Structures are given as structure tokens and as C-alpha cells.
Length: 138
View (cartoon, rainbow, N blue to C red):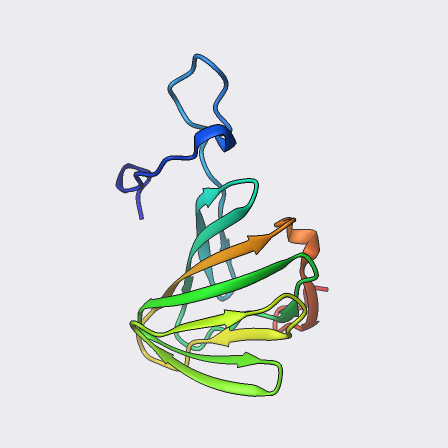
């Protein structure tokens, strides 16, 4: 998604300095399983657009300070939430409460795309406790 396609209001949470109409670019990254782009980063929530390549899967992880809501917009996903295995397709959603172990993988032939809404008190990458990881990250 191109930044020109993103239209949102961030109010007092904007990273742009006063008097400057340009917004600071939002974070994004390429990972071994695909990648993500932050769409909104505010004090009370963070929104990401996540793409998982065919055959890719994220680490089995949990968070202490945030819950997540996933909404699938394209492709198919196989999610794990604690002991539950959940199949997801476009239009499906899944809530992941804080403290729940979770992961998502893409068993399909097309890219899996979902929107992740994080809600809580802290959204830093150091709130990721990886329980299993295919790519050697701790």
C-alpha cells in the first residue's frame, strides 16, 4: 500500500511537529515470512497491514500489554490461539486477548493479507515474547 493511499486523522497523537504539515513516515518492515506496514500509531492503539507469503508463518508469541484483533482481507490463514486452531478467509476476524499465545500462517497459494488492530497500554516490539520461531529470533 502506498502512503498516498492512506487517509486518516491522528489528532494529538501525530508525530509531526507543530507548524509542519508533513507527517513523519510510519514504520514498516520486510520479514522472512512477508512484511507489515503501520497504518496508524497512536497512544491507545496501533494498526498494521500485514502480508504473509505462501508457506510463511509468524512466530508463536504472546504479549503482556496489548490485545489484538485481526481482520482478514485477502487469502487464507491458519491461526493458533492458545489450544485453538482457527481457519480464516477474507471477511473473517479473530480476537487475541493479552497473554494468549498466538500465531498465523499462510497455507494457501496467494498472499494472506490482514489488518491487525492492537489495543492496550504499550505497543513496542519488546512486548513480543516468542515461544517458537522458524527464523531463529528469540
